[in-house]
Amino acid sequence: MAIGASYTISVTLTLSASGIGHATLSVSDSGPGASQSVFLTGIGVALALTLFPSSLSFGGLATGTTSAVQTINVSNAGPGSLIITHLAITGADAGDFAQTRNCGSSVAARKSCAISVTFTPVARGSRVAAITITDNAGIGTQTVSLTGTGAGPSAGSPGTGNPSAGVSLSPAGLSYATQPDGTTSAAQTITLSNGTGATLNIAGLAFTGTNAGDFAEIANTCGASVAAGGTCTIGVTFTPSGSGKRTARLNITDNAS
Image 1 (tube, rainbow, N blue to C red):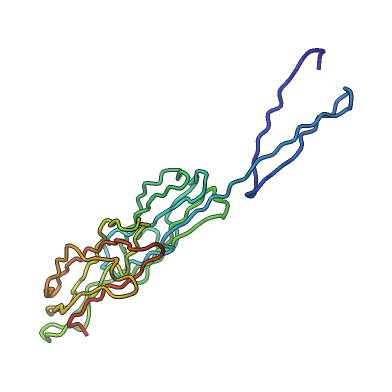
Image 2 (cartoon, rainbow, N blue to C red):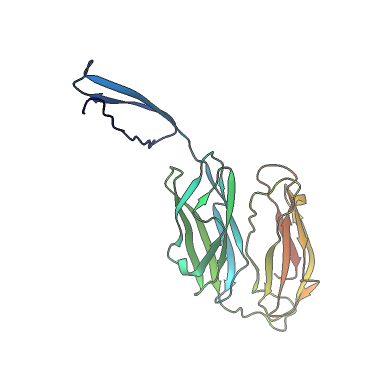
């Protein structure tokens, strides 16, 4: 360097783990002391990614028909932005499932977003896939398993007055995103299908289980019976009365064997 001249050294930090990182930048030269140094320090912040639920089950569904929407909640509990570099449906039957999302390419600190998934079986039998997410959370690739069953028309039991086959619920389970205590979620829908040749008589419908009071039935189109080959829907909302995981079961009593 010429007398009286100067230059700039630009330094970046890329920590491979959370916690404090430090190093020293040393410059050796012909000046007094022969070496100058600058102490470098930085803090790595861990991201806390949560996917809920960890799996979605759509139950049995007639081929070519589309299920009700189920939702995956993506939460970033960390203090930094979660950068999503890749999100896709993968697996043997990936084409049977579809997703839409409001996540974009990132999730801000302490925020969440939702992935909505539907199931449209193109063939009979078990159908399996997964939502795969790659991001900067430092824990590799995260997945949510997707399962469903493609079903053909049910034969039924015409003239018997007591259905013995072809009665189904879709989906087989409902999973709700994180909901603040005392507030009510959007309704999710269960479809009751009577694929038999006889009328399905409904004797009762009730929520049971540890947190039965957190769930409510709305917009029930089933009534007291479902005609042969008919369907009806039951809307269910979630209003948590406490923190943590809340579970219950919706039981339908009918004359199917």
